[in-house]
Image (cartoon, rainbow, N blue to C red):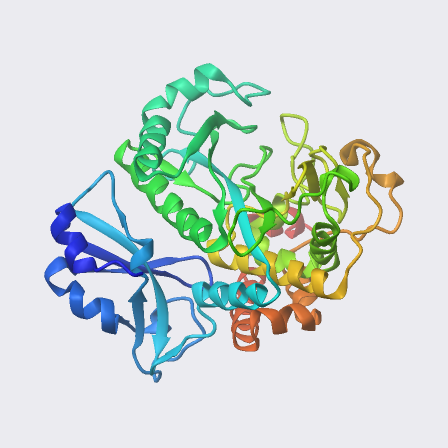
Length: 435
């Protein structure tokens, strides 16, 4: 049952609503709507010119209407007079098929036909930088192995605790916060949920983290590799599938290897089968491939995969099974679109279940030290162009995500790649000027 936003405003003292949607590149777009006008907006939606954002639309297209999903409404803990609400994009009374939240809703409905109800939790990593983004905000955060550094996390206590307090207030069930493996890097974890809720929370978390960081004079970034030589920002996803009532984990089977049921293995098989194409969504930027194909970092490990392998409780592989009834996909990075990340996980896994895909041999070696011993495992794409080409070749995955979305995504991401390769860099002059 949907929430009446006008009554929500009266009950909570809300003066404005941010009607928000996420475009193909992960950009969060919003209109600030006074509470007095929210009644009509809840029915009709807020009007946007889709061409003005990263969607494959033209100035000739009619208005795109962002219709708020009132069940997603969140009152901003740091500015309670404002509430944020995720919206579904519509045009001429039809869903905009390329809009990321619509893509996710569509694939959720498709999986439900097979009795699959996916739940995920994500591990969002970010850096706190100076406002210009040029350097780490904490000049004393210089340890060679800074992971879990208690002094460093306490020097940024005001930021981390404020964000965690807000998650507690919102009922998200946050359960741990730490300084991560790179200088200036942090991770905050909250309880897993159904994929649409997780995607909305992920989207809001990025907005909240950036807002709180700015309030304290810092800049939060989820960029995959913002600092050369340091570990990048991952966005690991923990995946399980439940029955319709959400009470029984159908990935769990104690009689099976690592406690992962036959259906869970097939879902994992789909992830392995589509991994190279998956990267175009889970690792969507030029910079993403500085993380998953990075040389050893200052801490001694990148903590990111570069080969399509899976394992038990071992962090050097693309997928690990840390316990019964779930597995962790370690491929995604901080640039992943919160909605498309969840959508592509379901699309790949659903195909695996339907085709009874085999995940292949489990490897338990240290992939960083002994990865050369693995024969036949595909390498992940070396760059964004390779990933886009792999996605374009994967007709099954493209169809599952929707032809309109896939065409728009490939078109706009190829434009981004072409913009990148046409850029002249200092490296080119430094290495070519005197040839």
